[in-house]
Each structure stands twice: as structure tokens, then as C-alpha cells.
Amino acid sequence: MQQRLALTPLMRQSMQFLGMSTKELNEYIDSLLEKNPFLKKQFKDRSGKEYASTAGPDSSLDYSRDNLTRDEDPRLSFIAQLRMLGLEKKVIEIAEYLIYEMDANGYLQVDTEEAAKDLSVEPDEVEEVIETIQKMEPAGIGARDIRECLLLQLERKGKKESLEYEIASGFINELAKDDASKISRALNKDKKRGRGGYR
Image 1 (cartoon, one colour):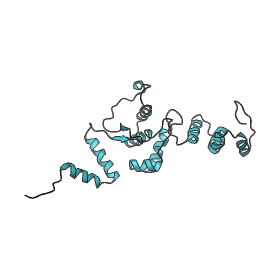
Image 2 (tube, helix red, strand yellow):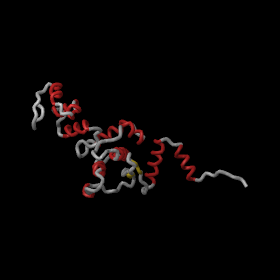
Image 3 (tube, rainbow, N blue to C red):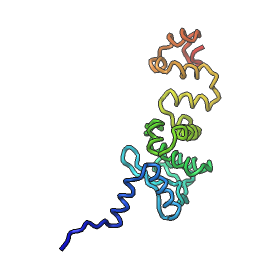
Image 4 (cartoon, helix red, strand yellow):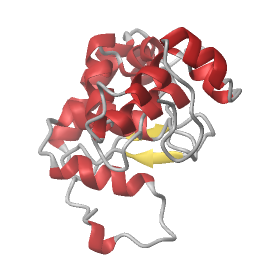
């Protein structure tokens, strides 16, 4: 009797996957998705929650606003907005990844470099998709911090040249401390409290 090590087809496939780079593996998975309409690409967010990409061949799920209820994940409304923009499959995949990396307040919890590495794309591509997300409703969604959120909201209201925008842009720490005196001195503006703000 002789002992021989025989590799099963599954073991051979596993070894093939281990030899692939992240980019090659993603390309292989995408090719399988194109061939088989019943397959879906699964992602995991940082909490370990899984979700399926809607950018694959089986993207017939109806995410229209009429079919969204208050009890559903609010991220679905963002995905619905994305689908109405007619974006490319690759852009939707990046956007969905970013949407599921937002916290409960809509702030993005992953940096550009890390997202690009996870998705095997260039950082510039991630930044472009972040800008697309930030144009969606509500204003301020997809911001990295409170400062960016305020700037996005003011910009949406057409106040990019306003005093409010200048304060939010350069004096966010002073604004958080309600240090009106320091802000007014720095901007050489008279301080006046009330509904009119600083003048």
C-alpha cells in the first residue's frame, strides 16, 4: 500500500485564489458575476454586517422611494438615489461600499486611501464617488467631519461666499466653543448676537 496526497478540485481552486492579487481576484469575481446572473457580490462593513452589491447582473431590485419604509435601513434610500443617476457599475460598487461605511449620522468612517485599497481602485476614483454621494439628499451626507458637513450644507444653499461659510471653513473650533469674540477679531467683523448672527 502506498500513501499519496491527492488535491481535490476545491483545494486546487483555493490554491489558485491564494496566488491571486486583490485586483486579479476582483476581476475574476466580476467575470463570474457576468456569466452567472444568480450570483451576487457580498460585502462586509466594519461591524461585520453583510450586504449584497446591486451593481451586478442581478440588479433588478426595486429601491424606489415608494417601496422604502421607515423601518428599513436608511442606506437603502441613498442606494435608490444612486440607481436613479444612471452611474456605471464600478461607480455604484464604490458608492455602495462607502455608504455602508457611514455611521448613523451619515459621516464617512473610512479614509480615501483605505477604501481604495479595499476596493482595488485608485484614490482619485474614490474621491470622485464621495463627491457624487455628497450631492445627494440630505445635504451634508458623506461628510468626513462636522466642518465638511456644514460647508456642504451652506454650499447647497448658495452661501459659499457668505460670512457663515467663512466661519465654518476657518473657525470650526472657535464656533464649537462659542468664542464669538475671537472669530470677530480674526475676521475684523463686529460681533452682534441674535438671530442675525455676526455682523
